[in-house]
Image 1 (tube, chains in turn blue, brown):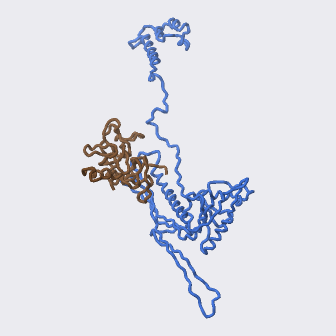
Image 2 (cartoon, one colour; image 1 turned 180 degrees about the vertical axis):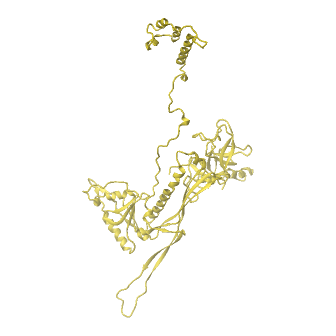
Image 3 (cartoon, rainbow over the protein chains, first blue to last red; image 1 turned 30 degrees about the horizontal axis):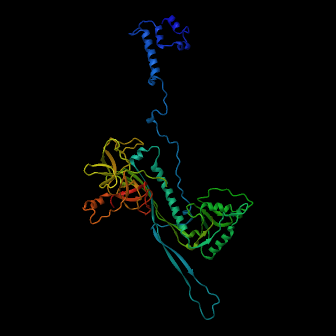
Length: 352
Length: 178
């Protein structure tokens, strides 16, 4: 390299970063190299320098990215990016509590008869000398029980099972069949409860308030005593169950007469699908389940009034190689039936 | 219940298999891919099928959500593309599959072809002594039946829980006249 020529090109700066910035035409830098051939090659130092500088200029002029550096970003290699499941939000199927309130009767024959008796034995007093009394008796009635079948199924193709690797929908949905069954049985039990309207009693709105500041103006105690008298007069059964939607219970426990107006308001929680004793009424369980459709009525009953008749429960799998499918089936037999409607009272107007 | 099957989904394993899954011919060229779940009619003379329009009669099938019909989401499958002459369909009497309804359809009514690729409730034509003046149209009316409307997802004709359909809903039909 001609050192003097280099100093002249860089205006005396020589080596250093400042030197490069002074040169207006980068290609002129090649003039500092001697026109001497590089050992083993058929080009001079000047030619090689000129070629390198020209390539750099071209790259800068054309913005040729293939000649520049690059950074691999998340948009690259898209086909190589795997699906990563970090977690999941599952569907919750409500199973309810109503079915569990009543006695289960095993019905392997899927049918039968339920008998109820209405006895009318009479014992006479002050029977006159020399005579006797008329015999007395009773009667019975039969309810026919036919237990229907219920089913749920999940099916999948072989190909879907092989290709879906971020989830196992077949296993997950099969596991949900049990909850779905319980949900439907709870709904059928609710329908049976609410179908009983033959005997009713007018209730009080537990949550009603008036005045300034508003205070409860309905006393549930009168209602409780009325219902106690109703069941006592039946000469059978025992009032032990009170069923409503969930919010009605919260209205009752915040009733100022029940909690005591100077006491703190009880904690408000979601009491749905729960049961427990009634404050002020021991011996009766209050069951709350929002599967009950009525928002104004309650059902006071002896739990023996309704029975759950249950047949066999079967789970099986059908695998068909021709259609390339697998199907899981859950089959059950169940009936919620009122066996003595005298033991159920519909209580109206317990909420507005 | 918020889940609704996509149209073209078979209702049960019994709607698959050699009895109900076939590969039919289709046209090729731009725009010839047929929407999954659309009802198609195969023309006897050409063996080629296409999405139905109102008034069509003949052999009916439903473009199936089955491999190897092309799936734009995953990119899988070679059938039922603009360049493919094949499409997998669910067909023949008894197959049960989800399609889209057009107009109101009473539960259990027979359905006929509607535009484009949809089904509508069958309404029997009113013939007089003079209209038509040949046997062709009355005889052909039987061939217009695509199937029977069974209900929405979750409804069952077996336990009588089906409800009438309104326009645009995903509904389940059983292919065949009865």
